[in-house]
Length: 184
Ligand SMILES: Cc1cn([C@H]2C[C@H](O)[C@@H](COP(=O)(O)OP(=O)(O)O[C@H]3O[C@@H](C)C(=O)[C@@H](O)[C@H]3O)O2)c(=O)[nH]c1=O
Image (cartoon, rainbow, N blue to C red; front, side, top):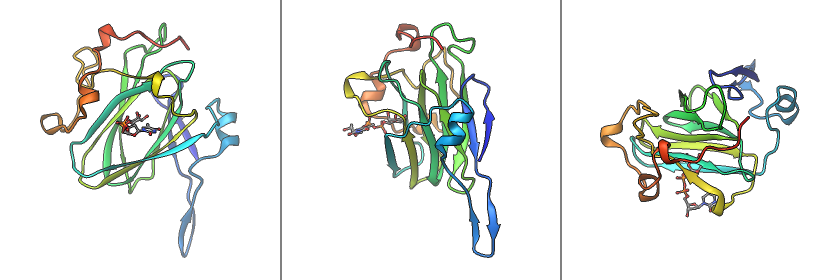
């Protein structure tokens, strides 16, 4: 697998390194040893599936607060998404900045989201499945979020005019009212 640092310190694009033959190809999607060697969290506690019926479905921006903070490895198994990560670590040089990356069932790319980042995505096609690995157990009391359409974050969601969003996500605070996570 090829790990390329993203513009936010600690975040990576993870691409497969296919070994091809007549049948197709083989590649690792996750490797604890490689992750640890590059300073990524190699823990794997849970794998989540997110099925999304309609294009425009927007989930986020979510995180689990410290000490239950979680790293995530996100991929799109079917369809297409815009995946967004936001650095919300107090004192981080990239505090409040985000990166948006398109992922698809065809490109097999993944985004590694470190602890202390908020995460969300919007589906760009109907019938889109997202699969993500979590480093930490689900802790409902530690769940937190930030408004997806926060004016300071200014995320350019591609289908904002037809966003399908849960009531919970619409009720999250603005970034200005959000208590940051511990620094890196
Ligand atoms: C995340 C999670 C949710 N649930 C339950 C809570 C709720 O009844 C139902 C749906 O949960 P949510 O509405 O929070 O699902 P969703 O809005 O898809 O939440 C996810 O969004 C993306 C962007 C992330 O980054 C994930 O970490 C996660 O926060 O599933 C679990 O039982 N275990 C879990 O690990």
